[in-house]
Length: 485
Image (cartoon, rainbow, N blue to C red; front, side, top):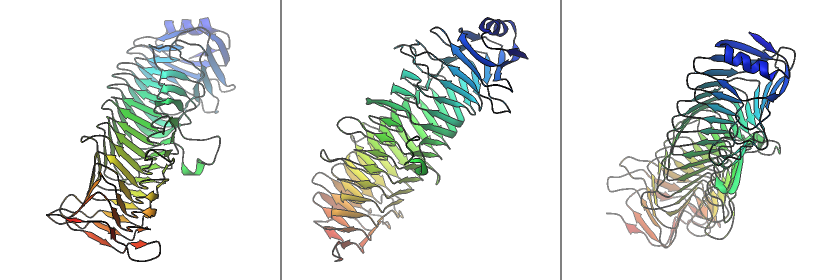
């Protein structure tokens, strides 16, 4: 074990080169740090002294630590709660830490203030290259880290990032304010938070941008919790599209727990996907503990799905999201779908509830594409038209398999279609020839408490009852119904 005092950067570098398995204790600040290499077969641990916080600041352009394939660096605080701060430059040309070996980050470490202006090397705080592994057990990657791709962390092809604690916050980028995951890169999140990150209003993925890589989320938060929404010092992530998460280029996101909450898509002309924006990617939502909640956008407060993207909801909750705006058919408080025949949203379970839209589709706005709901519930959503769902185009199949029992209930519309609103080019069907227990009940609107139809409505079976007008008169269906065969 070596103890390094402030200003002894040359000694620090000598130890890294000379020894293979060591712990370095840093006392005070090293303001003139050089570009250090953790070479193959070297295992280095760096922490602050018990008596003083420590800092290492790079003095010239380049990485602070370059971890080569086969090398391992652990950076950590200590038992006396002293911190280790790694600080970059306002005009750097690379990430502060480059990982082609292994990096372990523990509680008490802060990676901050590295503005990477390069257009070829990505990642403001950390760049994870091929075969690189970054395990974040604690610590903070925060405040004024920037890169074109991945303001906090960039995960390149073949790299892996495992996040199990603390935060990635206050970073910025054009794409992926907190994290950018490139093709064949992998991110596993079990705990911690990704919050307060931003991208330009023309960019995407305020918290996370997935470009052909994969993201597995079983815990933690992308954004902010409901209790923090009114705290001006702690907000969610912000982007033009995909305030929380942007998925494209066949990227995948699997959510079995945790929350995507309090994020905003505020792009010019109307942001899409306050929580999640799926643009040619795949999102799978499982488990009762998963939640997409409290997000805002003009189109798809919770989720926006476009361009051959796919979203499968097997459980969890999409709730308390808002689609704000007027004109241009804004809406989809919970979910917005606008794509082609390959754009598919499937609900096999879970709940879409208490979402609101200024105009269309409190729970769901289907503009084009395919929507299938075999089980699950749309409930307590509100909009001007289509409290539960607004079908402006595309095809919405409600109850698709024999024995299914989906439910649209207790939704409200201030104008038409408390449960479902079907416009001229929309196609909505309930039930199938083999029989289901599909139900549209106890919804309220001025016209068509249950269903308002000015498009195409096929009814095979199912229950539509107990729906009312705002004057408390029974109003299950307004418009024509075509019996299914």
